[in-house]
Amino acid sequence: MDRGQRKTREAILSAFISLLAVKDYNQITVGEIIEKADIGRATFYAHFETKDFLLRELCEDLFCHVLDVSCGTTEHRHIFSCDGNESVFLHLFRHILKNDNHILELLSCPNNELFLRYFRISLRKMVSQNLPVFAERKSDRLPEDFWVDHIASVFVETVRWWIENGMKESPETITEYFYLTV
Image (cartoon, rainbow, N blue to C red):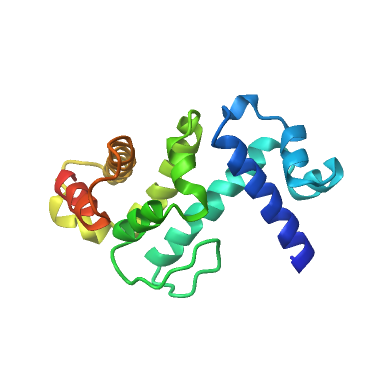
């Protein structure tokens, strides 16, 4: 992707994020996105087939960074910038606290259920890559796919609780709470 295409894509994503912060996903039109991004309709469709593809790609960009970290990659190819080498869960809580790329607005917006569904899908991948962290807590009777889904769901609910309660706890404390519940 050349510089112009990247700037256009970023403008579309930024416009979409700002609209999601104030409107329900189902009420946002492609027309509103292209108006806010100051691009033409053909340009939008050259980048994204539909609004659903735009949301899915936004979520993939946001969460791919975390997956990079969980794979031990220190150079982040995506929209976050950081230099931490901590637990991937602490790493994500720190990004949420910093509100990188408006992730906080997306997690707390009125239509966050769709966003949280994509978040949970990405978390399942991350959890699968980090299962040794939870190995001593897992019962032999639990199927692995159930265990992965449970951990991802607990993380999503921990994030939701933290945001709804004003994020008073530090990322380190909320990470500790999360580890105590799985």
